[in-house]
Length: 386
Ligand SMILES: Cc1ncc(COP(=O)(O)O)c(C=O)c1O
Image (cartoon, rainbow, N blue to C red; front, side, top):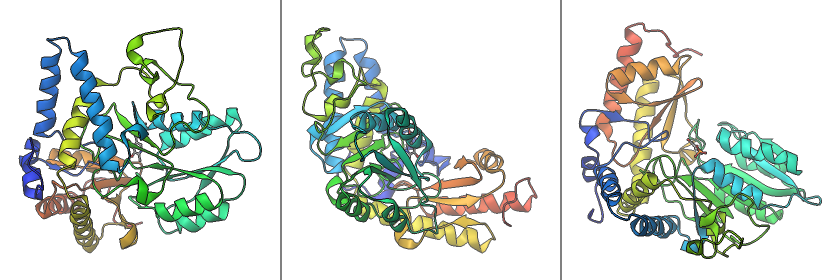
């Protein structure tokens, strides 16, 4: 059991790999913690018994504690295999009838999310992309497109590529005034800053558990403000029944809770990992964690800019937990950094540098020293000039 009120140094000690490696890639995947490893051993031990009662109670634990972390009720949380499936479940419970059949999707949404909406076009949904790139005013861009035809507004809390934090509660207000609902992808925010569905005033929120929530791939959380509103989900399974243990193939009923959006057996290893991650997250002061990562983002930005690196840096109030460095060959740079024990997260044209509670200023120094060495060695991919 982890003690309440962990300091960044105490959090760091729970990640043994950090003793010999700088992990700046949590925007892609979390490093393994000691509690996560212990949880996976528990799961393996359960396999030597009749594991289903324990698997079920771990799954219940995730629903309950995910609800606490997001400020929701347990009945408003569904466990889904991925953010893409969670988005699909939201889409499948919309009607796309009459004149209100439009979805506004950020052009900076994660591709998997955007693809789900695009695939809804065959059902009559009208998809409009909104430019929310750094440098634009995302709220104005959404407002200009919102009208009586808008059914849903979809937005990331923090964009996966540029680390831009969107003004979600203002967007919720604008969406609701136009009679639309708001769907938020919080995958780049949940676990590293306060994410509270009531303050955000969103209607749906989806997040992976494999990044800042410190779990494993294979499990995502879906919050629905009114889970039973609208049509029943068409992607379903025995876990979405009123009485899953009745094992009745002839009865298709849906509970009123968000479990109606679940499907079959969840990825059990990811469930155990999520328990470990949520236990750790619940012992952090996420406001303090947000301040901590913001100071690391700012420090890294200052030092990298001083050495001529080209960055995308949103305005102070719109920064997330990662920094974006432009490089024509980000994979080459990431591979070089990895060989020097610094893990980062490359994407097309950019290197993402992500911070969590376990990172510190020494990590920033190691990253910057390594990048400076890489540049001065004249390696391929010097992206310092536009
Ligand atoms: C913002 C965001 N949403 C979603 C995902 C993942 O989506 P899925 O769980 O469907 O793979 C990622 C990254 O992997 C992401 O950065």
